[in-house]
Amino acid sequence: MKKNVLITGITGFVGSHLADYIFSLNDGNIEIHGTRRWRSPVENIEHIIEKIQLHYCELLDAKSVQDLIASVRPDIIFHLAAQSYVMTSFSAPVNTLETNICGTVNLLEAVRYAKIDPVIHICSSSEVYGQVRENEVPIRESQLFRPASPYAVSKVGEDMLAFQYGLSYGLRIITTRMFTHTGPRRGEVFVTSAFARQIARIEAGIQEPVLKVGNLESVRTFADVRDTVRAYWLLVHKCKPGEVYNIGGSVSMTVGDMLNKLLSMTDKKIAIKVDPALLRPSDVTLQIPDCAKFRQATGWEPEIPFEKTLKDLLDFWRDYYARRKKRA
Ligand SMILES: C[C@H]1O[C@H](OP(=O)(O)OP(=O)(O)OC[C@H]2O[C@@H](n3cnc4c(=O)[nH]c(N)nc43)[C@H](O)[C@@H]2O)[C@@H](O)[C@@H](O)C1=O
Image (cartoon, rainbow, N blue to C red):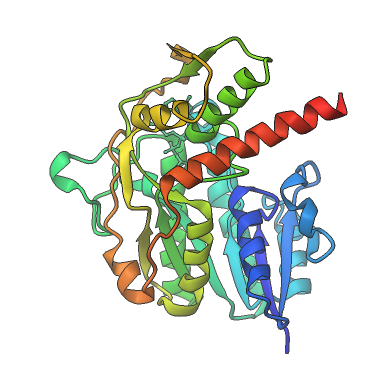
């Protein structure tokens, strides 16, 4: 019998890569279902749109989610739909909390009412740990939560809901606290993409050679999105419901060092300018994960070198502006 895999947020960055990864396994017994909101652009999944079952679904509408779950009856759920930009959560805290917390409740309730028993992957985030002290890195799953943004609080909520629905109703939920991940299709607001996009625009002659930045001192441990989705697939097959796992890359550096790597990939001379609008009321400046628990459970290791991740991201934006120019 075919296995139904449901990816909420399949039109997004990680969702689209996860669908690509599952297709690459060439398993004829898997049917991929995904959700989209009526306004969501579909360019990330245009290349696979004929091969997936796409469902209109509004996570904040309980009926919409119940109808979806009752009709798909998924065996595996990857809940990737979210308001995921930290900065936006400061200007739209209620929307962030609603989407990430109430949206997750609607999904978990819909599973209960459908009386099905799927494996459910809930995406918490490394942001739940907030600002850690130097003696607290690498960060383990037992680290205290000190959320530094409404987004982080929303992910604490999601994390706790995953625990509680497992405890109260026996749902088979596995939670990840993923650290920063990037690669082609990364949304333009996130730091790696924001920088790569500006370089591509400068190369295309549609932006002055001045690159706007926020806080360059933050340390991040970058993972490639393609390693990330491979980890998520292993997670639902090898990890234990009720447990929570850190997942992250192995390359840690400041955002400024990451920028220098990107700048070394272009011939253009580019000036750097701090834009105060990109500075957060409170920032998380030290994120280095301890992923031993996940590695032990799955044998997963990140494989893609960070230079390739950045080059692929930059080329993604170069292609984007080349195609735009052709259409004009
Ligand atoms: C795990 C976690 O990972 C992501 O959250 P994030 O790490 O906050 O991602 P980001 O790319 O917005 O910022 C990274 C750092 O870079 C600094 N920074 C400097 N200059 C710019 C800049 O120009 N733009 C942005 N966005 N950040 C900048 C900024 O202040 C911050 O310190 C999300 O996927 C989130 O959903 C998630 O769960």
